[in-house]
Length: 317
Image 1 (cartoon, rainbow, N blue to C red):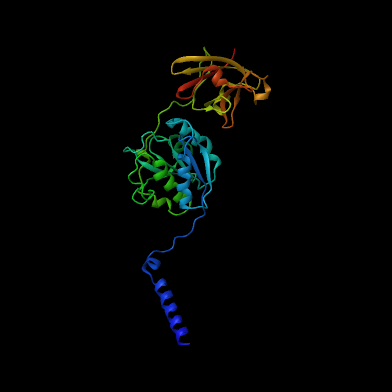
Image 2: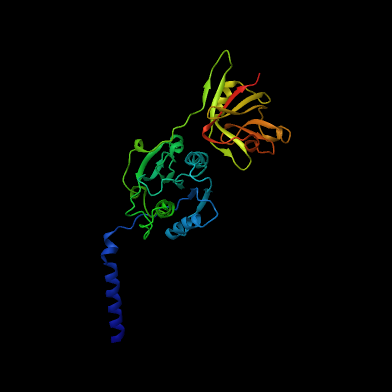
């Protein structure tokens, strides 16, 4: 009995000491937030282990994370990256965290940020213009600079070339998993201080003599099929009073150089023209686009994309 009483007293004291441990009562237990989706968009490619390393770091933060890939293509094309975020983000739920790493200036003095939009999405990114279009599309609620003293993968301080894993991936995972709040990312920075990419927006030009026209940008290609996408919205296109079946003239420019001059019907979808024939249509983002039915228009006509590629659209006479 004496041995039993001694064990009981010892166990009780041990439990009391654990309960009174300063680390246990000095820090309040934070409320648990639901885990948010984590979306990765990088230019790392899929030929080596870079993407897998980022995912490994994220799962090291929480194995409950749901990680999805947007894409991992086209090295150093910041504007395409900005457009892909604009394309994809609206279809993800509020609270989604996007880790976006197209970072040719990695390791330099550029800021590492997390931007919260008015929609409630979070974008973890280098401050190099990558958030230009999403900031315009969703509005900026607040921007914070990542505090690397607390939000950097432990033991990675001597590495200066893999912020996608060590800072962006790690911080994005902690934010998505609810380990940190947005306020714990780091100090607030004014949105006015962010780098913005300049680009020419679509424009309607009224000309009673030469005829009305719309000029627009070719921000990206629909790369799987070679369709040429523009930033000319359907609402803007409607100002030309073009109906389904009407012929449309589209001229393609690289800078000031005319690359291609096309006249094609305006149709709802690809199968409304014969196989191999071109058409003008409204794409899934409700913008004007050009395609070959079951062909690759961009490759066939040497069309590229970016801030120096443009189209001019008129109603064919």
